[in-house]
Length: 236
Ligand code: DX5
Ligand code: ZN
Image: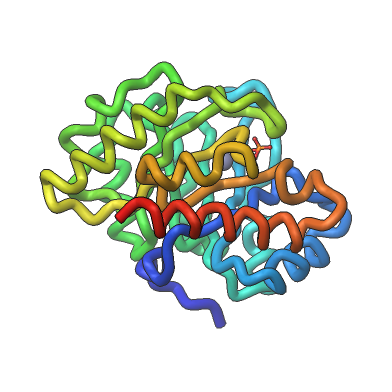
């Protein structure tokens, strides 16, 4: 039923990707329906293993249930050690993009090849302390670069401004190298920084608490979209 193409991610930019981590898991279907109604095209799914990050969240069964419940693009952010062992299971469950952490992959090139071979979009994430330069030799083979603007593991943390420079650097490298990856930013994103992040070059804003932690998540999506689209106008 769902569009399995990783290219869906490119249909309209910038995108808001609601992170379901901040939703009420007992009413996940309702939460997804609510934000779908506000016109989002993708959902961000945070997978944590209690090892790579000091928290445990959800896994493949939830992805499979989401896949049955929605046609939205499923963007899975794996905050786990040894992600290669589970990538195929996530794709089988319905993930269309799988993002692994640079810090969790001693053989990053192989990990990314593995994701692409399964027909999914391949993303790579970098923690706040990890420089963009560590990605130099994989920029031509990724669909997405995820800039963490908090230390991963928890929702509701304070945004780290170091993300701006990384986003600008990636946007520049993309232009120079004629690469096609999208730039995603995750952590502490909200109305106060959405415009500035998109102006710096972010294509996808992941937002958890600033959507599902508000009384009206659909309205919050609409407001975030308006802010980010405003930046797109001023960028050119
Ligand atoms: C954090 C996760 C984020 C998280 C963001 O480790 O990767 O996706 O859900 O939550 P907020 O938007 O609340 O910072
Ligand atoms: Zn995330």
